[in-house]
Image 1 (cartoon, rainbow, N blue to C red):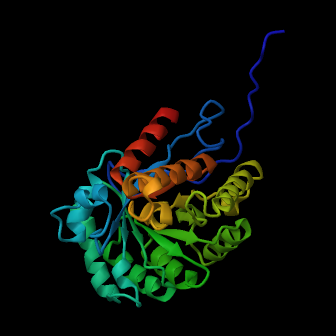
Image 2: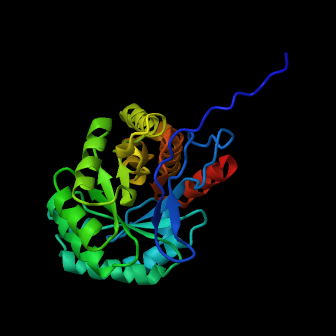
Image 3: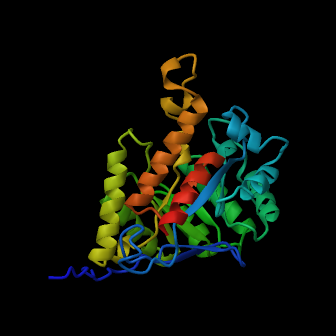
Length: 315
């Protein structure tokens, strides 16, 4: 008997969420099949890659990252260089300077920087804005930046259980930007946060999830299984509260673990520190993409090159 290839029925589709404006706007989501399973159904939008730019710069970064931003003196200049890296689909601006335990830069000043970065990018690449991980301060920064960038279709990461009312009201309702819903590696917490944000009036199709992240080898199996379970519930069970695309900020975790920070002098058997960091970033990014993440944030040009090549080959 001749082999007959089974034709599985595609599940429900993930919401499509567009970031940016103009010809270079990008769309996340839209797929109704497993990651990269284009032979089973349509994947209208391939996974996207963002590059991380800190408003404090990368002065102590490994050579490959430091060289990328050599000669820049402002976040706007750094963002313009980052946007030109091959394989980059969008730019992620992280406001580390806003941290109350650091420089404690005002929300108003951060909004000025956000506007300068947006102007430097123009319509060349969409912009994603990431906070300093202080819930109260992030809500203040997002409010001012969302107002300054009204009409630019920016994704703000992240709205959490502790500050979602403020962030969703300003970012999602007042200025019609995209809301990044961040939970802590748990499908039930992710679902609950999406429900709370939509109950405030934010359209579920304006939400992108960050369901938590970890570097490969650091409890990463929980991240993978959470993304996998979310996609299964969204597609196979038509759970509309989990049909938001997923964004994973890989770089913020991978460049902080010992494999990416321990010097060659301290760990002579581990090899070059930069190569280790790049390897960790690539391994983590590829893993979350295979689990179902629709977008990743990376930092090193070599990581972006490798992950971009994989997406192109499998798309």
